Length: 111
Length: 114
Image 1 (cartoon, rainbow over the protein chains, first blue to last red):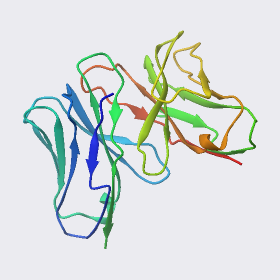
Image 2: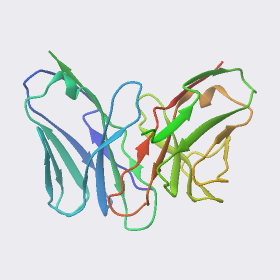
Image 3: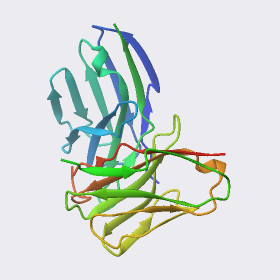
């Protein structure tokens, strides 16, 4: 069973600070996705990364896929209270198998 | 623009009761999934379906059953509810399981078994 380890599990920061959360595995993934989940709602896709070393930006969020396609990071610049939520990474291996989800990083941005 | 619709949103069951969680999608997606989310445990796959008439077990299928008679609907059945099944249940759908295809989630069913 492939595992995705996310760290930190919890993160509480002040508005305007920068932060990075990580998603690591010992397995290779053909693609990796990041989702954000707000209280009382289902997860919503933020980005998909496919190529090793790939970097994608979504406004203040920067996503990177490791060269070996075993890890990914999410960096948020100048965090806002609206960034508060549970950030989940999810990966697909080379076969036609369902997504494997990490346990998530719960982010709280305090105004 | 409904997407994935789950009903009910909340339910309290007594131990030993049965119920069906409903899930419907209007995006003509072939792939549908049921997850449970426990506090601090992320999403665990219960069952999934790659098309009408085809279902397969996920990581935690025990105590649950599913059926997929149409493309749109993917109900999850709990037989003999147990306290360990207290959780938030999410249904999701996707166009495929291929590279980069997103899963679209419903808003969940919060189930308590007492």
